[in-house]
View 1 (cartoon, rainbow, N blue to C red):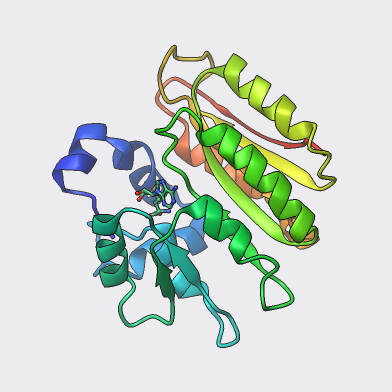
View 2 (cartoon, rainbow, N blue to C red):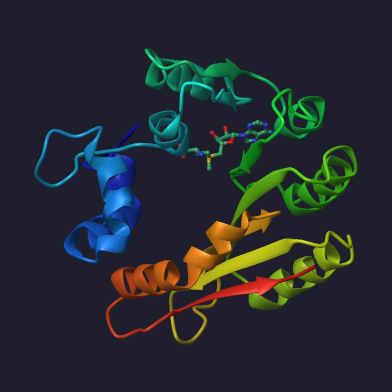
Amino acid sequence: MYDLHGDEAGRTGEAAGGVLRAFADANPLLDDYRAAVCAVNEGGEPRLYPGSPRILAQLLRTQDALILNEKHPEDAIALRAAMRGTPAAVHERDAYELWLAMLPTRTPRGLVVVDPPYEQTDERPRITATLAAAHRKWAHGVSMIWYPLKDRAAHLRWKDKLRRLGIPKFLAVEHWLYDTDQLGLYNGAGLFIINPPFAFTQDLPPLLEALRAALAPEGHRGTITAEWLG
Ligand SMILES: C[S@@+](CC[C@H](N)C(=O)[O-])C[C@H]1O[C@@H](n2cnc3c(N)ncnc32)[C@H](O)[C@@H]1O
């Protein structure tokens, strides 16, 4: 749970360009997202932001299981506290080791969500290697990996490496916020989605356009693309 009025949120100003823009927008395609944020607030402008574990916990059906992981002890304590009262299990392990150890999942279907901080220089190579191994163990499973968009050239080199893994159903959804790249800055974000369900890809184009319109920074249109790498 993130305090949108706390020091950290004030310093980066991320909420103003993100969740608060989505709340200022009336497009019904964003209703589910707004409802997920409203669920942890008491009406009015949101003060708290639910992290992805809390959002996923809200979506659980009785037959679903949610397994979470956080390596750093202090963050693991915060995660356990935020998940109290939900059926989620919380592990405190290295994600790259746990990712492979959990596959194939016990349930016939599953989704692995990877949301790394990208603070280590070897983060991208570790993702590439782990994804390749995960695909060998669990070829039909759905995986979703978040990444920031900063340097376009370096990003294209990473995508080339991923393309060479030969994973057939590999979708890259990318949101470039600005019409010209801002050097050294956060230019947007993307999701790699392996084996996206058919209904999801069908629903995606209008949703991406709704997000682009809602999140466009002042004076920029921005672009959201969905590209098959496989
Ligand atoms: C971007 S944050 C995740 C935010 C979370 N998805 C949310 O919505 O609240 C990345 C987290 O990964 C943790 N982390 C970094 N390296 C890790 C690793 N090798 N294994 C597991 N967790 C790691 C960090 O401590 C940090 O809390």
